[in-house]
Image (cartoon, helix red, strand yellow):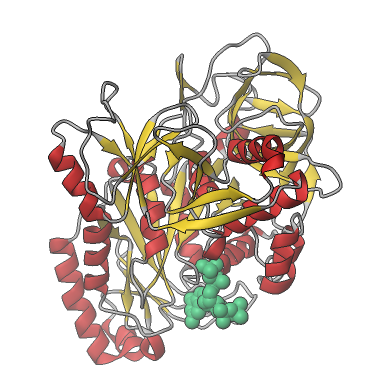
Length: 530
Ligand code: G4P
């Protein structure tokens, strides 16, 4: 065991997922406040200013004032070293958002109490389930009128298919929000509207048996309602079971208000107790233990053109085992080369600092002269193994790409292939043709603009994009299927990826079902294997 075991064991690396506006940024700011990383919450990502600061890497980002990339934040709290991976939302939702989840050991799901489960949460949740990573739920905005709590939990269970275990329970909401009941300690923590940017609250903790105090703080009606709800809960909800939580089968649920800083520290403390140290990762030699093994990492994201003056790229990697030191030689397994990583840095929300060392659980960004691909493994020179690949996620928007100047065919093919390799877009061809007809698929529509912009600016190629009506793509799992004889619905389209793997495009869910029905034994998948 390395002497760095302590460093690794104090690391907790998680992603925050939510639908835009549920309060992900606000919650992150409050976490950082507790970690002492900033003095005043709000100064991390004051929307307009900081988002620019993070992301003036591309003109398109500046023009629109949004961030196309996701960032990583590191802070210390209670003896833990915490890495938060932000998952970009809004229009900048992209395949990278999914890939970020590949680098996390757990996910915090923020849900707006008045809105319940929303589209983007649902999509990201699917990826968490696929990886079986633990999911911790923070139900936010309790200071606003919220729906019925039991119904909300029901919705999570039905829509997402995961059992819920409330760790605390809200008393009222909106103007009538009184606080939460802590089930384990059998006490009520009263709501206090903490001033923006401060840590100190004026919450009072009242044992559930102290009738007098309860009465004066939450009133008769809420007291009775709470007693009923506790009975119901104890009878009906799933039992707390750390093993099931860590297997991603049960989500602990917390209630609070990120904006008024209520319930955030309680959440953080419980979360840190329940979540795991950096987990072992599967490689072709079996599971690689983070502590027992020397340095290894895998690339989960490639960000192009962070510096406009050069056509450089940054490869983001998650360290899976051991310790990384800045001057160390490592092996890039897929490239078959031993090298020193160039300018290893930690990418923070609004700054980048050059790293001297980093440990399993940490995320680093290194300068990439165009040699890395998503999923690549790095390890020590005398080791030889590869981490399991990162799946390809289903794009939901498709367009036919037409090149305006046919003389520039070579640049066009080179440009679009390179951009596809970075993983921002996926390219396909008609099933029975070659590169003359290209179909591009993206997870978020902004990537269409990014593609157009980059082809023009970096490759001097103008294109036209004609939107196609398809919304679903499926990979075919059967190795022996003959696409020529496969019968689908009339609006289904047969295509292939650059490796020649067959895929199907569908306009709606119904067509997928019909096609599966008409072709016995056909196995369709929402994730492609790399
Ligand atoms: P996101 O990152 O998930 O997109 O959400 P973000 O934190 O940016 O929050 C979205 C909006 O919701 C913000 O208001 C924020 O202040 C508000 N909000 C977050 N948490 C809570 C909460 O617990 N209670 C209430 N009442 N509101 C909350 P905004 O007006 O859009 O932005 P801003 O001008 O306040 O930054």
